[in-house]
Image (cartoon, rainbow, N blue to C red; front, side, top):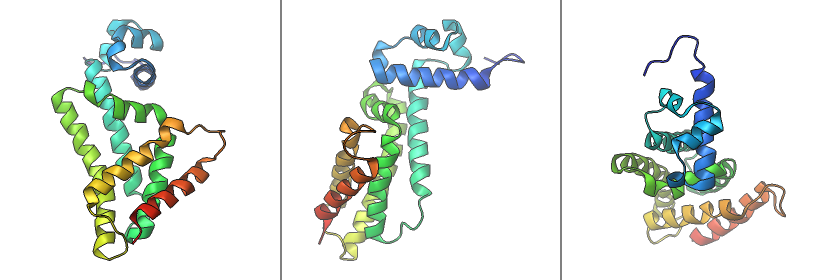
Length: 195
């Protein structure tokens, strides 16, 4: 549906996305209605359809944006050629990026089940592309005799699962700063793949 001239799509559109993000993270996708999202934004429920065709599209858009930003931010890191420094950079990057986006991360991992098959396939393709970045580091390290892992694919998934765990317990202002957490996790990663 076309927006009318003078409308506030540049303001309301992002507010719709932000409200959906917060509500999906707080209550779960299935428990949130378009009416609730509209109430959070302060518009009539019918007005939401000026910004998104349906709730599934909103969920997919939030997840795709998260994955696109994750891949772009990682790919912008400098000097990822040498396996050992690249693995350290990946570890620290993953923790920082995810700690800064707890709602996006929660939705990206917990609401995969809510995606329709075509949308699931598209998000899963992006997730695999990110996992492949780490797998490539591990494989290159094994080939050069710098790292020791039996199966780079399995190791990549295991390491990502471990790094994702930070979001379940880390809180800013807690006992450990984020750089301290990054240091501790890097030590665990390093020891787990050391020759």
